[in-house]
Image 1 (cartoon, rainbow over the protein chains, first blue to last red):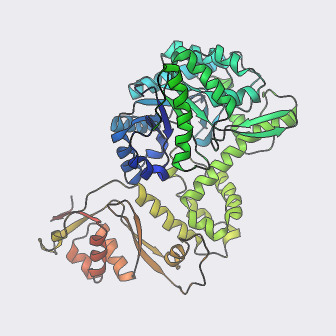
Image 2 (tube, rainbow over the protein chains, first blue to last red):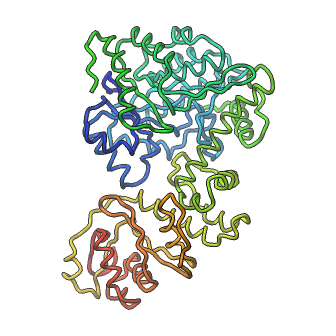
Image 3 (cartoon, each protein chain N blue to C red):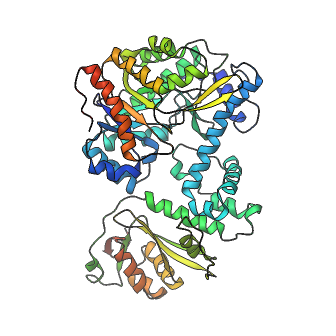
Length: 283
Length: 250
């Protein structure tokens, strides 16, 4: 299940529903967070069904805690399976992170050390998800603020090995790469040079905020502003190597009018068009 | 699958540190301050995200106490009743009980009932779908044995306080003037076919009839509790009767 068109998509915001219905096909696909559609019925499902009538759909989970040390929540896997069966999304993706522990939901994408042991756990969890959902999933690289002394694998080698062991695909979040590179003082281009690009099935782009620590800048993956210029540059470099890939603009905080999101989408569309040698035709 | 004890222990210490000041051991950083400032991003994300989720569920409670007070109160509630799974639309069912036992809001005795009303609205918003039937259903059968299927969103709400008036007065962002309400209040809560959630004030007699109808009591029996006219009119007007049958309940 990775049938998204190699075009630009937007994160769906209910406040944009009327704009979206008025302009079907304004972008190539929409992404929704799976956990927002786990009620029985009503407006959320009515909107999602209507959205999917006209557009490809990327189902993005934030609740599986794939990097958690404990077992995956079987109830949550069943809820996801119900959504997949009901809507037949063109893609399912989740995060290399953990967010629950010992019967508590922590509501954030938390970082994990990269070791042989965590690799085995993550690979087993990805296998379990793909079996439960009956499809290949995409695993997303995280934005992180801390790293661990215990890590013995680089993040890119860790992800490549998860792909090798499970056959999953990857969701490359270019903003996350840039945020982590600044935060941990490594070279984003070197990271991307070692990233298993052959496995990438989708790209995420988003804006970030900047804090100043006594030891230097700390970028926050806030999804509340336009994509930063250096992230656009890295994105263009990736697309020049891979060719056009489904690309999502994420904007989750301080959500702007729909036209602002279309402006961001147009910028990505131009980069995709340049890579495919086509003339840009932004809706 | 094998569980890595080190990984379990590390995540347990990380989770514990989200509630305290010092970061967990084993983080890379220039010095302790650097590690603490970096780790604080996660602590803030968790608190802020859950506090906003709670405020989205209880917007009128937030208006009644103010955003700053609500944030501080949310911290206490989050520590006492953290979410158990990632489906946050199911979180907060014990918030009214928490409010009833939280001394700083003891001067607002109606607050738990306002929270209960907001919970009922949330349940109605996410309730299963069902299609209304034609009004003729009411006249086509013997009311003595006719049982109505109400939409899954329908609830009969009651409060010993003026929770319905208070909730209604705080729908606008601007604070209301003095309220003339006092005493117990009731409401019909449900979701219309256009997905709008309604809160219709009703008298106690109509509330009693509605309770009977929700329990699938035959119409004729429910009418012994009070005049059913208002309840039936509201249910029909909002498309909340989704089926009917005569005889024993299914």
